Length: 455
Image 1 (cartoon, rainbow, N blue to C red):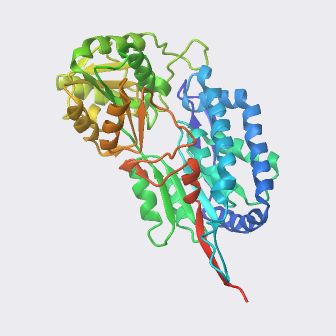
Image 2 (cartoon, rainbow, N blue to C red):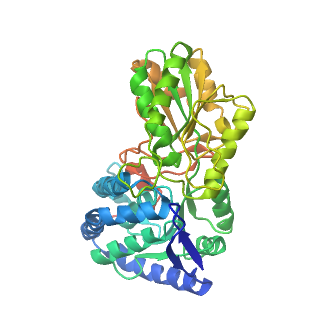
Image 3 (cartoon, rainbow, N blue to C red):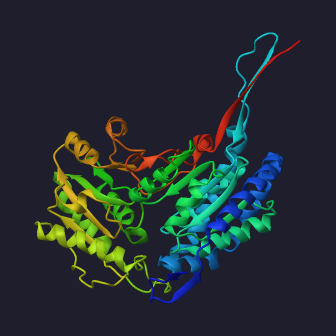
Protein backbone atom coordinates (compact mmCIF):
# COMPACT_ATOMS: atom_id res chain seq x y z
CA UNK A 1 0.00 0.00 0.00
CA UNK A 2 0.94 3.63 -0.40
CA UNK A 3 -0.80 6.71 0.95
CA UNK A 4 -0.88 10.22 -0.41
CA UNK A 5 -0.90 12.42 2.67
CA UNK A 6 -1.65 16.09 2.24
CA UNK A 7 1.14 18.43 3.35
CA UNK A 8 -1.59 20.82 4.52
CA UNK A 9 -2.54 18.85 7.61
CA UNK A 10 -1.49 15.24 7.04
CA UNK A 11 -4.91 13.92 6.05
CA UNK A 12 -5.00 10.99 3.62
CA UNK A 13 -5.98 12.16 0.16
CA UNK A 14 -5.76 8.76 -1.54
CA UNK A 15 -4.47 5.30 -0.78
CA UNK A 16 -3.99 2.34 -3.07
CA UNK A 17 -2.06 -0.88 -3.47
CA UNK A 18 1.00 -0.81 -5.69
CA UNK A 19 0.44 -2.75 -8.89
CA UNK A 20 2.07 -6.17 -8.98
CA UNK A 21 4.65 -7.51 -11.41
CA UNK A 22 1.88 -9.52 -13.04
CA UNK A 23 -0.22 -6.39 -13.62
CA UNK A 24 2.83 -4.60 -15.04
CA UNK A 25 3.32 -7.38 -17.59
CA UNK A 26 -0.38 -7.37 -18.51
CA UNK A 27 -0.35 -3.59 -18.88
CA UNK A 28 2.65 -3.64 -21.20
CA UNK A 29 1.10 -6.39 -23.30
CA UNK A 30 -2.14 -4.42 -23.56
CA UNK A 31 -0.18 -1.32 -24.53
CA UNK A 32 1.61 -3.17 -27.32
CA UNK A 33 -1.72 -4.32 -28.77
CA UNK A 34 -3.39 -0.95 -28.30
CA UNK A 35 -0.49 0.86 -29.93
CA UNK A 36 -0.98 -1.05 -33.17
CA UNK A 37 -4.61 0.07 -33.33
CA UNK A 38 -3.74 3.65 -32.32
CA UNK A 39 -0.96 3.96 -34.90
CA UNK A 40 -3.35 2.91 -37.65
CA UNK A 41 -5.77 5.65 -36.60
CA UNK A 42 -5.65 8.56 -39.03
CA UNK A 43 -3.50 11.42 -37.71
CA UNK A 44 -6.39 13.89 -37.97
CA UNK A 45 -8.56 11.57 -35.87
CA UNK A 46 -5.78 11.13 -33.30
CA UNK A 47 -5.41 14.88 -32.97
CA UNK A 48 -9.16 15.38 -32.61
CA UNK A 49 -9.34 12.82 -29.81
CA UNK A 50 -6.40 14.38 -28.01
CA UNK A 51 -8.07 17.78 -28.27
CA UNK A 52 -11.16 16.28 -26.64
CA UNK A 53 -9.00 14.98 -23.79
CA UNK A 54 -7.35 18.40 -23.45
CA UNK A 55 -10.74 20.10 -23.32
CA UNK A 56 -11.91 17.62 -20.69
CA UNK A 57 -9.05 18.56 -18.38
CA UNK A 58 -9.59 22.27 -19.00
CA UNK A 59 -13.32 22.04 -18.35
CA UNK A 60 -12.58 20.39 -14.98
CA UNK A 61 -9.75 22.75 -14.06
CA UNK A 62 -11.34 24.12 -10.88
CA UNK A 63 -11.93 20.73 -9.25
CA UNK A 64 -8.57 19.46 -10.53
CA UNK A 65 -6.96 22.58 -9.05
CA UNK A 66 -8.37 21.72 -5.63
CA UNK A 67 -7.01 18.18 -6.01
CA UNK A 68 -3.55 19.57 -6.81
CA UNK A 69 -3.70 21.80 -3.73
CA UNK A 70 -4.69 18.94 -1.44
CA UNK A 71 -2.07 16.60 -2.85
CA UNK A 72 1.04 18.79 -2.94
CA UNK A 73 0.13 22.04 -1.23
CA UNK A 74 0.13 24.71 -3.94
CA UNK A 75 -2.14 27.66 -3.05
CA UNK A 76 -5.59 27.25 -4.55
CA UNK A 77 -5.35 30.68 -6.19
CA UNK A 78 -2.70 29.23 -8.53
CA UNK A 79 -3.57 25.54 -8.89
CA UNK A 80 -6.19 25.75 -11.63
CA UNK A 81 -3.71 27.80 -13.62
CA UNK A 82 -1.67 24.65 -14.14
CA UNK A 83 -4.46 23.24 -16.30
CA UNK A 84 -4.53 26.48 -18.29
CA UNK A 85 -0.84 25.82 -18.96
CA UNK A 86 -1.63 22.23 -19.91
CA UNK A 87 -4.10 23.47 -22.52
CA UNK A 88 -1.49 25.86 -23.94
CA UNK A 89 1.21 23.20 -24.21
CA UNK A 90 -1.09 20.46 -25.45
CA UNK A 91 -2.63 22.59 -28.18
CA UNK A 92 0.78 23.88 -29.28
CA UNK A 93 2.09 20.32 -29.63
CA UNK A 94 -1.06 19.19 -31.42
CA UNK A 95 -0.65 22.13 -33.79
CA UNK A 96 2.94 21.13 -34.51
CA UNK A 97 2.13 17.45 -35.07
CA UNK A 98 1.50 17.56 -38.81
CA UNK A 99 4.70 19.36 -39.81
CA UNK A 100 6.71 17.42 -37.22
CA UNK A 101 5.42 14.04 -38.40
CA UNK A 102 5.35 14.76 -42.14
CA UNK A 103 7.40 12.66 -44.54
CA UNK A 104 10.76 14.05 -45.60
CA UNK A 105 11.28 14.09 -49.38
CA UNK A 106 14.87 14.49 -50.60
CA UNK A 107 15.70 16.00 -53.99
CA UNK A 108 14.09 14.27 -56.99
CA UNK A 109 16.13 11.59 -58.77
CA UNK A 110 14.76 10.29 -62.07
CA UNK A 111 13.53 6.71 -61.84
CA UNK A 112 13.34 6.64 -58.04
CA UNK A 113 10.81 7.36 -55.32
CA UNK A 114 12.49 8.16 -52.00
CA UNK A 115 11.20 9.34 -48.67
CA UNK A 116 11.75 9.20 -44.94
CA UNK A 117 8.76 8.43 -42.74
CA UNK A 118 8.58 9.18 -39.03
CA UNK A 119 7.45 6.00 -37.28
CA UNK A 120 6.22 5.88 -33.67
CA UNK A 121 8.55 4.07 -31.32
CA UNK A 122 5.84 1.86 -29.81
CA UNK A 123 5.20 2.01 -26.07
CA UNK A 124 6.38 5.05 -24.12
CA UNK A 125 6.71 4.89 -20.32
CA UNK A 126 6.28 8.30 -18.67
CA UNK A 127 7.57 8.68 -15.10
CA UNK A 128 6.31 12.00 -13.75
CA UNK A 129 6.96 14.06 -10.58
CA UNK A 130 4.65 15.84 -8.15
CA UNK A 131 5.83 19.47 -8.24
CA UNK A 132 3.98 20.40 -11.46
CA UNK A 133 2.13 17.12 -11.87
CA UNK A 134 0.29 17.93 -15.10
CA UNK A 135 2.72 20.35 -16.71
CA UNK A 136 5.67 17.98 -16.42
CA UNK A 137 3.76 14.95 -17.69
CA UNK A 138 1.87 16.59 -20.55
CA UNK A 139 5.19 17.46 -22.20
CA UNK A 140 5.66 13.78 -23.06
CA UNK A 141 2.15 12.30 -22.97
CA UNK A 142 0.45 14.42 -25.63
CA UNK A 143 3.19 14.35 -28.30
CA UNK A 144 3.83 10.65 -27.66
CA UNK A 145 0.19 9.87 -28.31
CA UNK A 146 -0.04 12.28 -31.24
CA UNK A 147 2.88 10.48 -32.87
CA UNK A 148 1.02 7.15 -32.60
CA UNK A 149 2.69 5.67 -29.54
CA UNK A 150 0.92 4.07 -26.60
CA UNK A 151 1.65 5.58 -23.17
CA UNK A 152 1.97 4.01 -19.73
CA UNK A 153 2.06 6.65 -17.01
CA UNK A 154 3.68 6.08 -13.64
CA UNK A 155 2.96 9.19 -11.61
CA UNK A 156 4.36 10.21 -8.25
CA UNK A 157 2.57 8.71 -5.26
CA UNK A 158 2.31 12.28 -3.92
CA UNK A 159 -0.05 13.15 -6.81
CA UNK A 160 -1.86 9.91 -7.73
CA UNK A 161 -5.13 11.63 -8.63
CA UNK A 162 -3.39 13.13 -11.65
CA UNK A 163 -3.11 9.68 -13.20
CA UNK A 164 -6.80 9.08 -12.59
CA UNK A 165 -7.69 12.38 -14.22
CA UNK A 166 -5.63 11.58 -17.30
CA UNK A 167 -7.37 8.22 -17.54
CA UNK A 168 -10.79 9.91 -17.37
CA UNK A 169 -9.79 12.42 -20.03
CA UNK A 170 -8.56 9.80 -22.49
CA UNK A 171 -11.56 7.57 -21.85
CA UNK A 172 -13.82 10.55 -22.57
CA UNK A 173 -11.88 11.08 -25.82
CA UNK A 174 -12.41 7.48 -26.91
CA UNK A 175 -8.81 6.28 -27.22
CA UNK A 176 -8.57 2.56 -28.03
CA UNK A 177 -7.97 0.08 -25.22
CA UNK A 178 -4.31 0.07 -24.22
CA UNK A 179 -3.36 3.36 -25.89
CA UNK A 180 -3.16 5.09 -22.50
CA UNK A 181 -2.82 3.36 -19.15
CA UNK A 182 -1.41 4.19 -15.74
CA UNK A 183 0.25 2.20 -12.98
CA UNK A 184 0.92 2.84 -9.30
CA UNK A 185 4.44 1.53 -8.73
CA UNK A 186 7.14 1.32 -6.11
CA UNK A 187 10.73 2.06 -7.13
CA UNK A 188 11.23 -1.63 -7.87
CA UNK A 189 8.03 -1.74 -9.89
CA UNK A 190 9.10 1.32 -11.90
CA UNK A 191 12.44 -0.35 -12.64
CA UNK A 192 10.60 -3.47 -13.86
CA UNK A 193 8.34 -1.38 -16.09
CA UNK A 194 11.10 0.52 -17.85
CA UNK A 195 13.18 -2.66 -18.22
CA UNK A 196 10.30 -4.50 -19.88
CA UNK A 197 11.07 -5.64 -23.44
CA UNK A 198 7.76 -4.13 -24.52
CA UNK A 199 8.70 -0.58 -23.49
CA UNK A 200 10.41 1.31 -26.31
CA UNK A 201 11.13 4.71 -24.73
CA UNK A 202 11.26 6.18 -21.24
CA UNK A 203 10.48 9.82 -20.39
CA UNK A 204 11.60 10.55 -16.84
CA UNK A 205 11.33 13.79 -14.87
CA UNK A 206 12.86 13.83 -11.41
CA UNK A 207 16.10 13.81 -9.48
CA UNK A 208 19.60 13.09 -10.75
CA UNK A 209 19.63 9.92 -8.62
CA UNK A 210 16.34 8.87 -10.20
CA UNK A 211 17.76 9.51 -13.67
CA UNK A 212 20.71 7.27 -12.92
CA UNK A 213 18.37 4.55 -11.63
CA UNK A 214 16.29 4.69 -14.82
CA UNK A 215 19.41 4.60 -16.99
CA UNK A 216 20.67 1.54 -15.11
CA UNK A 217 17.29 -0.18 -15.38
CA UNK A 218 17.25 0.04 -19.19
CA UNK A 219 20.94 -0.76 -19.67
CA UNK A 220 20.27 -4.23 -21.07
CA UNK A 221 18.30 -2.92 -24.05
CA UNK A 222 18.79 -0.25 -26.69
CA UNK A 223 16.00 2.27 -26.17
CA UNK A 224 15.93 6.01 -25.84
CA UNK A 225 15.65 7.68 -22.45
CA UNK A 226 14.65 11.31 -22.00
CA UNK A 227 15.81 12.75 -18.68
CA UNK A 228 14.50 16.03 -17.26
CA UNK A 229 16.43 16.30 -14.01
CA UNK A 230 17.42 18.95 -11.50
CA UNK A 231 18.48 22.55 -11.75
CA UNK A 232 20.28 25.26 -9.83
CA UNK A 233 19.16 28.01 -12.12
CA UNK A 234 21.01 31.34 -11.99
CA UNK A 235 20.14 34.90 -12.90
CA UNK A 236 22.46 37.79 -13.73
CA UNK A 237 21.30 41.37 -13.20
CA UNK A 238 23.58 43.73 -15.13
CA UNK A 239 24.20 47.37 -14.27
CA UNK A 240 21.93 48.54 -17.10
CA UNK A 241 18.96 46.39 -16.05
CA UNK A 242 15.61 47.64 -14.81
CA UNK A 243 16.45 46.83 -11.20
CA UNK A 244 12.93 47.16 -9.81
CA UNK A 245 11.40 44.93 -12.48
CA UNK A 246 14.19 42.39 -12.05
CA UNK A 247 13.65 42.22 -8.29
CA UNK A 248 9.91 41.62 -8.65
CA UNK A 249 10.22 38.95 -11.35
CA UNK A 250 13.18 37.12 -9.85
CA UNK A 251 11.54 37.02 -6.43
CA UNK A 252 8.54 35.37 -8.08
CA UNK A 253 10.87 32.99 -9.91
CA UNK A 254 12.50 32.03 -6.61
CA UNK A 255 9.45 31.70 -4.37
CA UNK A 256 6.54 30.59 -6.59
CA UNK A 257 5.32 27.07 -5.82
CA UNK A 258 7.36 27.35 -2.60
CA UNK A 259 10.49 27.19 -4.72
CA UNK A 260 9.67 23.65 -5.83
CA UNK A 261 10.53 24.09 -9.49
CA UNK A 262 13.43 22.59 -11.40
CA UNK A 263 13.75 25.87 -13.34
CA UNK A 264 13.09 28.16 -10.39
CA UNK A 265 15.67 30.84 -9.56
CA UNK A 266 18.01 29.60 -6.81
CA UNK A 267 21.00 31.96 -7.16
CA UNK A 268 21.33 35.54 -8.37
CA UNK A 269 24.40 37.57 -9.37
CA UNK A 270 23.98 41.34 -9.36
CA UNK A 271 26.14 44.20 -10.60
CA UNK A 272 27.83 45.53 -7.47
CA UNK A 273 26.60 49.12 -7.86
CA UNK A 274 22.97 47.99 -7.56
CA UNK A 275 23.47 45.14 -5.07
CA UNK A 276 21.95 46.74 -1.97
CA UNK A 277 18.90 48.18 -3.74
CA UNK A 278 18.27 44.92 -5.58
CA UNK A 279 18.46 42.86 -2.38
CA UNK A 280 16.08 45.29 -0.70
CA UNK A 281 13.65 44.82 -3.59
CA UNK A 282 13.71 41.01 -3.35
CA UNK A 283 13.30 41.14 0.44
CA UNK A 284 10.34 43.49 0.02
CA UNK A 285 8.67 41.05 -2.37
CA UNK A 286 9.32 38.13 0.01
CA UNK A 287 7.68 40.01 2.87
CA UNK A 288 4.49 40.32 0.83
CA UNK A 289 4.06 36.54 0.69
CA UNK A 290 1.33 35.06 2.88
CA UNK A 291 2.31 31.67 4.28
CA UNK A 292 -0.60 29.49 5.33
CA UNK A 293 -3.31 27.00 4.46
CA UNK A 294 -3.23 26.80 0.64
CA UNK A 295 -7.00 26.23 0.52
CA UNK A 296 -7.52 29.84 1.62
CA UNK A 297 -7.67 32.42 -1.20
CA UNK A 298 -5.33 34.87 0.55
CA UNK A 299 -2.47 32.35 0.83
CA UNK A 300 0.37 32.91 -1.65
CA UNK A 301 2.94 30.48 -0.18
CA UNK A 302 1.70 27.05 0.81
CA UNK A 303 3.51 24.17 2.46
CA UNK A 304 6.24 22.19 0.79
CA UNK A 305 5.16 18.75 -0.36
CA UNK A 306 6.84 16.98 2.55
CA UNK A 307 8.39 17.74 5.92
CA UNK A 308 11.52 15.93 4.77
CA UNK A 309 11.88 18.28 1.83
CA UNK A 310 11.23 21.33 4.01
CA UNK A 311 13.85 20.22 6.53
CA UNK A 312 16.39 19.75 3.74
CA UNK A 313 15.84 23.41 2.82
CA UNK A 314 16.19 24.44 6.48
CA UNK A 315 19.48 22.54 6.58
CA UNK A 316 20.81 24.48 3.58
CA UNK A 317 19.88 27.76 5.28
CA UNK A 318 21.37 26.73 8.61
CA UNK A 319 24.60 25.53 7.06
CA UNK A 320 24.93 28.76 5.09
CA UNK A 321 24.36 31.04 8.09
CA UNK A 322 26.84 29.02 10.14
CA UNK A 323 29.38 29.72 7.38
CA UNK A 324 28.71 33.44 7.49
CA UNK A 325 25.70 34.00 5.22
CA UNK A 326 23.37 36.83 6.23
CA UNK A 327 19.65 36.02 6.49
CA UNK A 328 17.47 39.00 5.61
CA UNK A 329 14.25 37.50 6.95
CA UNK A 330 13.44 35.67 10.20
CA UNK A 331 14.99 32.20 10.11
CA UNK A 332 12.38 29.45 10.14
CA UNK A 333 13.42 26.82 12.68
CA UNK A 334 10.13 24.94 12.85
CA UNK A 335 11.82 21.64 12.02
CA UNK A 336 9.47 18.83 11.04
CA UNK A 337 6.84 21.16 9.57
CA UNK A 338 5.91 21.29 5.90
CA UNK A 339 5.32 25.05 6.22
CA UNK A 340 8.45 27.09 5.54
CA UNK A 341 8.79 30.87 5.35
CA UNK A 342 10.82 32.42 2.50
CA UNK A 343 14.43 33.42 2.95
CA UNK A 344 16.91 35.73 1.20
CA UNK A 345 20.62 35.14 1.85
CA UNK A 346 23.62 37.36 1.10
CA UNK A 347 27.30 37.07 1.93
CA UNK A 348 27.05 33.67 0.30
CA UNK A 349 29.72 31.82 -1.69
CA UNK A 350 30.12 28.78 -3.87
CA UNK A 351 31.54 26.94 -0.86
CA UNK A 352 27.98 26.69 0.45
CA UNK A 353 25.43 24.01 -0.46
CA UNK A 354 22.75 26.68 -0.83
CA UNK A 355 24.65 28.00 -3.88
CA UNK A 356 25.75 24.67 -5.33
CA UNK A 357 23.20 21.95 -4.57
CA UNK A 358 19.57 21.96 -5.63
CA UNK A 359 17.64 23.43 -2.68
CA UNK A 360 14.09 23.12 -4.05
CA UNK A 361 12.54 25.51 -1.58
CA UNK A 362 11.68 29.20 -1.02
CA UNK A 363 15.22 30.50 -0.53
CA UNK A 364 17.57 32.40 -2.82
CA UNK A 365 21.21 33.36 -2.47
CA UNK A 366 22.40 36.69 -3.91
CA UNK A 367 26.01 37.68 -4.72
CA UNK A 368 27.57 40.88 -6.06
CA UNK A 369 29.75 40.68 -9.19
CA UNK A 370 32.10 43.17 -10.84
CA UNK A 371 31.65 42.36 -14.52
CA UNK A 372 30.08 40.08 -17.11
CA UNK A 373 32.92 37.56 -17.09
CA UNK A 374 32.70 37.02 -13.36
CA UNK A 375 28.95 36.50 -13.68
CA UNK A 376 29.41 34.02 -16.53
CA UNK A 377 32.00 32.04 -14.60
CA UNK A 378 29.78 31.82 -11.52
CA UNK A 379 26.67 30.93 -13.50
CA UNK A 380 28.56 28.08 -15.20
CA UNK A 381 30.04 26.88 -11.91
CA UNK A 382 27.37 24.24 -11.39
CA UNK A 383 26.72 20.58 -12.08
CA UNK A 384 23.39 21.66 -13.56
CA UNK A 385 22.44 23.48 -16.74
CA UNK A 386 18.69 23.87 -17.23
CA UNK A 387 17.95 27.60 -17.61
CA UNK A 388 19.72 30.89 -17.00
CA UNK A 389 18.20 34.36 -16.83
CA UNK A 390 19.89 37.60 -17.94
CA UNK A 391 18.56 41.04 -17.04
CA UNK A 392 19.82 43.87 -19.21
CA UNK A 393 18.67 46.45 -21.74
CA UNK A 394 21.49 45.43 -24.08
CA UNK A 395 20.35 42.79 -26.54
CA UNK A 396 23.85 42.34 -27.98
CA UNK A 397 25.26 41.88 -24.47
CA UNK A 398 22.59 39.29 -23.69
CA UNK A 399 23.38 37.37 -26.87
CA UNK A 400 27.10 37.40 -26.09
CA UNK A 401 26.61 36.30 -22.49
CA UNK A 402 23.98 33.72 -23.42
CA UNK A 403 26.29 32.12 -25.97
CA UNK A 404 28.79 31.45 -23.20
CA UNK A 405 26.35 29.93 -20.72
CA UNK A 406 26.19 26.16 -20.28
CA UNK A 407 22.43 25.80 -20.21
CA UNK A 408 19.46 24.49 -22.13
CA UNK A 409 17.51 27.77 -22.19
CA UNK A 410 18.62 31.39 -21.93
CA UNK A 411 16.03 33.94 -20.81
CA UNK A 412 16.26 37.71 -21.26
CA UNK A 413 14.30 39.83 -18.79
CA UNK A 414 12.13 36.92 -17.69
CA UNK A 415 12.56 33.55 -15.96
CA UNK A 416 10.87 30.33 -14.87
CA UNK A 417 8.69 29.79 -17.93
CA UNK A 418 8.35 27.10 -20.59
CA UNK A 419 7.49 28.25 -24.10
CA UNK A 420 6.04 25.14 -25.78
CA UNK A 421 7.29 26.34 -29.17
CA UNK A 422 10.88 26.07 -27.91
CA UNK A 423 12.87 22.99 -27.03
CA UNK A 424 12.87 22.14 -23.31
CA UNK A 425 16.22 20.57 -22.61
CA UNK A 426 19.16 20.61 -20.23
CA UNK A 427 22.88 19.95 -20.16
CA UNK A 428 25.22 18.41 -17.59
CA UNK A 429 23.25 16.89 -14.68
CA UNK A 430 20.05 18.61 -15.77
CA UNK A 431 19.54 15.71 -18.15
CA UNK A 432 19.45 14.84 -21.81
CA UNK A 433 16.95 14.73 -24.62
CA UNK A 434 14.21 17.23 -25.38
CA UNK A 435 10.50 17.78 -24.99
CA UNK A 436 8.18 20.35 -26.59
CA UNK A 437 8.65 22.16 -29.93
CA UNK A 438 9.07 20.43 -33.29
CA UNK A 439 12.26 18.84 -31.97
CA UNK A 440 10.34 17.15 -29.16
CA UNK A 441 8.67 14.86 -31.69
CA UNK A 442 12.05 13.59 -32.85
CA UNK A 443 12.55 11.88 -29.49
CA UNK A 444 9.28 9.98 -29.88
CA UNK A 445 9.64 8.69 -33.44
CA UNK A 446 12.25 6.89 -35.50
CA UNK A 447 13.12 7.50 -39.14
CA UNK A 448 12.26 4.84 -41.71
CA UNK A 449 13.58 5.23 -45.25
CA UNK A 450 11.85 4.08 -48.44
CA UNK A 451 14.06 3.73 -51.53
CA UNK A 452 12.03 2.55 -54.53
CA UNK A 453 13.47 2.03 -57.98
CA UNK A 454 10.64 2.54 -60.45
CA UNK A 455 10.26 0.23 -63.47
